Length: 450
Image (cartoon, rainbow, N blue to C red; front, side, top):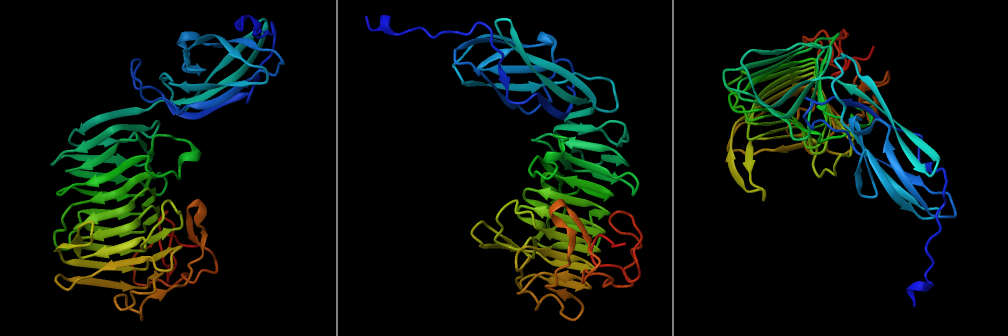
């Protein structure tokens, strides 16, 4: 008797639904590795469709391209290219989830892939457009790189899936102009030799595998480049971004012979550290290390390091830091700070900038049981506690270098910067980070102001 008193909802026979936007745009997505592969797939876009009527509606949804479409939808928990009998209450909405996986197009540039979703109530139709650019790529999946492998095709990108490994006695070289993308679980693990050979005119880049503008400053998109003990490399005119650790080395230093050389290279937007070394040997010139969750540079448990015309800067607030972003120590400690071991540290920095948004951006941990040889000249430091280690007479302290626009990653100097023309005239470097000519005397840091 009670149920007989409940009225059934009244349904509109013909009604136009209202979409939350007129186009779902996915920007650039790599095409699939093969017809059967499921990588890569886009992020999921969420939109809503509203019933503006005072009555209920029974709606049918369909991807115009059908089962062969690159786009897939989910409406009210149901997936497929056609989804029928979705009931929507008066002035209520349902969510529509859209993904796309694009097939190879045999083009060197991104190709536009269009489709649409139709929503029908009776004889009334409403639609929303779907758009994405598909970009063909070379793929490497969880691979050991063969000896003397060279990547040189600048016409389309390379994509690393689940990691790539350079075996001992093997060599992997990236030539100028190539673009490399790495998936979320990917890293480059070097047990042999790894080189990047970019140029002023054609830099080499590696970043996370979402090639869209909005994600370019997002950290932790991939692991980073790891040099194991015995690994070595030379990175020139490279741009390394969005990693957890940009470059990490456990390669033990062999006297004054670095295992890694960096020149004219940027490492930015890293979730943990731009450059980190355990007892490593690193030489860097004309390099930018910027915007990291913990450290732009950390050299711990000793090692051998030499930096010239480099900029270490952090204003990103990727994470809340307790310490300065530039760190060195001749110790190895456990998580409670207990001293486990010591190793000799030799460090030289010249014509460089260490700056950030904390009052003290230099973190040093020195014990007397091992050497702590620190040499610095013609460099600008933001620090208040380390002057007894950093020579006062040949360096500059706590003078804002006045970067052009650090919020967008521009660490060139303004025309009123106190770091202008303060470098050692005998620095020996004729060009800057971007290969542009330096003055004499040159500016401190990685970038020369014109």
